[in-house]
Image 1 (cartoon, helix red, strand yellow):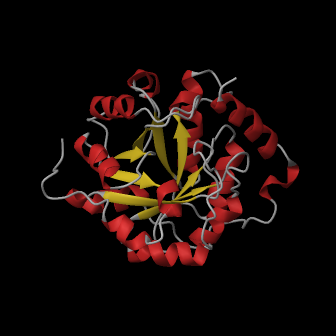
Image 2 (cartoon, one colour):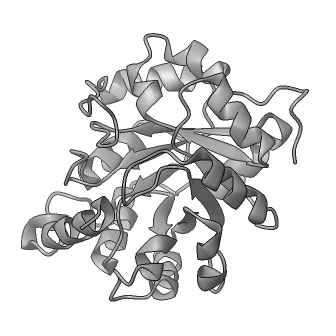
Length: 266
């Protein structure tokens, strides 16, 4: 069994617990800003989404020693991020919906609720904590790991006032998920079955998805070179988490990832 199938089984067990929604607000604390609009506003300079995460299972040293939420927000805001992502997954990642709630409460920037979403109750959690968008993973449906279709999950998200970021890992996933009503699209260069970084596959997928916008490059950004490869492949924005958690100077690190004038768009 690959990592993705294990995560689906563990996630189903977690969200089936009666206490999964305990302690969460019953309604968002404020009007949600649009993540799609934030990415689009970044324009030629490219959008950067900073991710709050406690563990990175694909890394040699998974525990990240993450900063407090307060210092994370202040340091990344100084770096000019356009939005945030927050791991809400407990299994393997050590996250929780309450982490998303804490981030939302301290920023006016949009926040992505990032989890292995397999059940509508996770979308309810995202709506309650005030997230702007949820992540849906196309491979879950392609691999037969969903009981609720992606299209239905996306519709549920929209009904709860949430935007949808649809994530792909390979070009073979594009056509099977073309009927999913997404607001944004992402390409993850990390294979979620093996946790290997497959940059060439990701870049090929980004180029094949050139008609879909806004388009986010996800995973594998360890510095300016990784960011440049996403920009060169046509990404409108990038999401960075593990390397950001480990840098001693988040502001300088984030500023180094911006698209330069010479890179342009594919």
